[in-house]
Image 1 (spheres, rainbow, N blue to C red):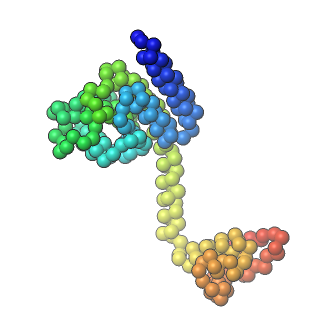
Image 2 (cartoon, one colour):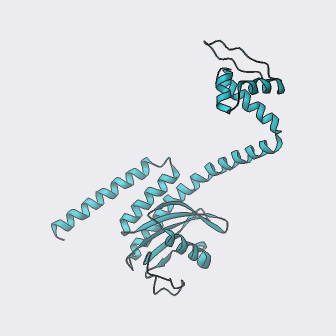
Image 3 (cartoon, rainbow, N blue to C red):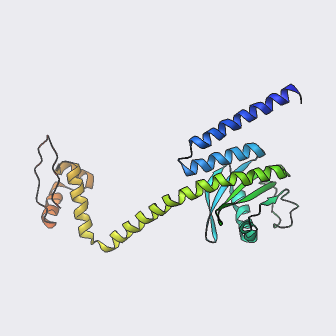
Length: 243
């Protein structure tokens, strides 16, 4: 190997080591972990773009990406719709040459990736995501590259499964809020909003009126309507209104 080639390989190896280190450092953010994993995989394969798609029953949803476009979204949806059983068996779907691959419909133009690989991501025995990488050059992945992508899918699985509890908590909060809105009369919500603004603004009627876009008289009338006793708060401290 010539000195320049060897120097380039060493530099690339150092860059990848740095990226591996960043993967570990950023592991507290599931989405960032997935994005950094994509960056490393794309560096190893000279990929054009990459993405992680999570599985939700029969659908797939974009979770993290680097450089994708509509052609990628169309391609991954087609592969998922037509060859889902391949992923469920734990097999990688590799298209070395998009234009000559008979498993996919002919594309209308040559815009977009010329080759791509889709690796199933498992958590235990459950298929939880797909790892996608493509290239403008046909045959961009060797058997060794595909094997390495399979190993990286374990990191993607970690990112996706750690994100799930966060989604569950967000959904639970949304459902709780929807339940509150369904069961709480409008007048009660207006009363709570008025109390909240009054407490936050030390019962400054003029300020609350400006925030709500009404007159001070309107605020006084609402205090009477909702049976809220007026609080006179000294400038030195804040007292809470009695709900």
